[in-house]
Image 1: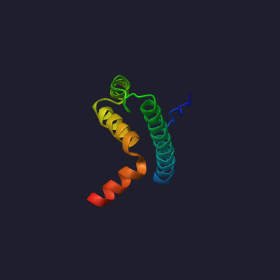
Image 2 (image 1 turned 90 degrees about the horizontal axis):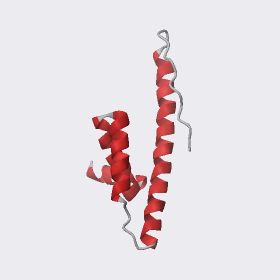
Image 3 (image 1 turned 30 degrees about the vertical axis):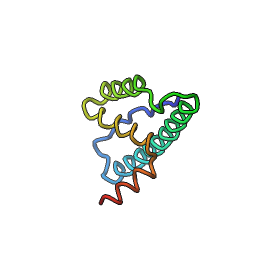
Image 4 (image 1 turned 180 degrees about the horizontal axis):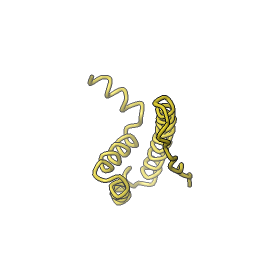
Length: 102
């Protein structure tokens, strides 16, 4: 299991550049984790299909939604749904859909 980064105290005298750099680094980590989660989700879906089961496991997805909601509140539900959608469509598929609809 991956360790989560521990919160870092933000000093009152931190300048905007330091904070922006820290945010950018966290964003890069989040993107990498989302891509990894998407790969794992797609692999799990294919494995389920290969043994004759539906691609998605509803009980597992609902558990994830509850965990995200518990940890992040109402907005966590939307995040969980987006992550599940990425797992079904793939990151590149979703990005190209967004560009086509813009």
